[in-house]
Image (cartoon, rainbow, N blue to C red; front, top):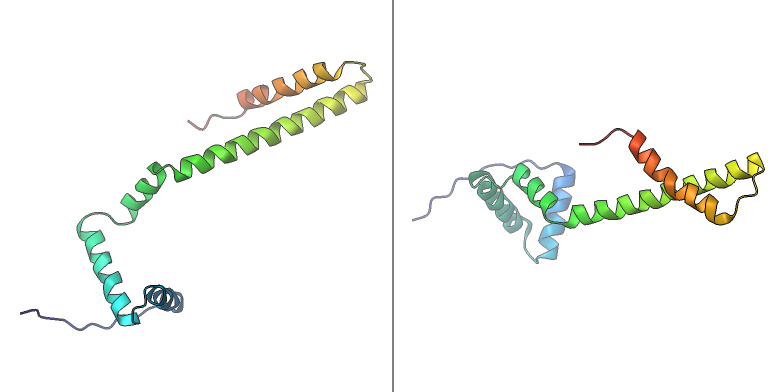
Length: 122
């Protein structure tokens, strides 16, 4: 025979809204959804799959690394654009009559120099 222990659970307003929304999406009553959440929480704590493990799983899952790669490409492009603008302004201010290819080569070399000057993250 199954014995049940009754307890009072206090939820913050945001937790209550999240519970109601989750229950609505699954066509469950709020108490049934709360029971599932409590059971999942117990299992997560007992099996060591709580927050630390989830964070590691997300980080190694590939989703974050792909987004970081996209951000890095965007930052590289922004850095190149800034370097090209600086090179064009510099050549214009100095009054040099260099061809566009030479200015572009200066701009392409500049991000490499900037990366060498920045502190390493490793």
